[in-house]
Length: 170
Image (cartoon, rainbow, N blue to C red; front, top):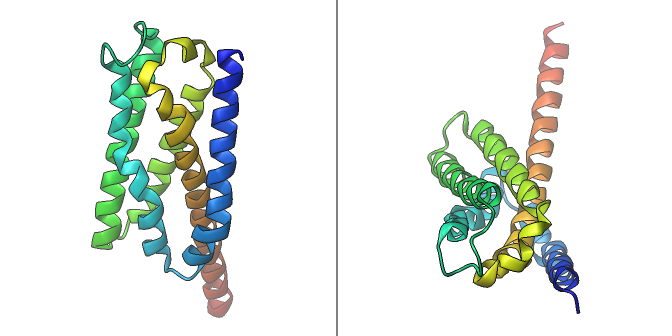
């Protein structure tokens, strides 16, 4: 079987399994949680995105990865991981602007993943880092999606609350 086909199958099947597990187990639990607690739970896997720095380690990949991919994927993951850690800290501390940082983290992290995934030419050289896009990235994509859903719901609540307050003033 062609390497690109194997990669695609592994990625898609991992994504399906993650989505099913989220739908069956994670979403029902998250709906019972306050927004802050739900977001903390969803951000935790992203705090480990420093693992993406492995793209820069000689010997973990078969041949050196194209520098554009290696540096953007590695440092994109690293920055996303740092933003995730900062988001966890400010959510736990209940800082006023914590949702803004979560928005920033989620947008940066999602763009980073899609940017890395679109560069299929690196697949033959991934070596042991193959597990990052075929196993870890699907988990991260599903949790990014769930974070966006929760953030948009919170935004809708805030908008409706402000709209209601404006109606009470008039």
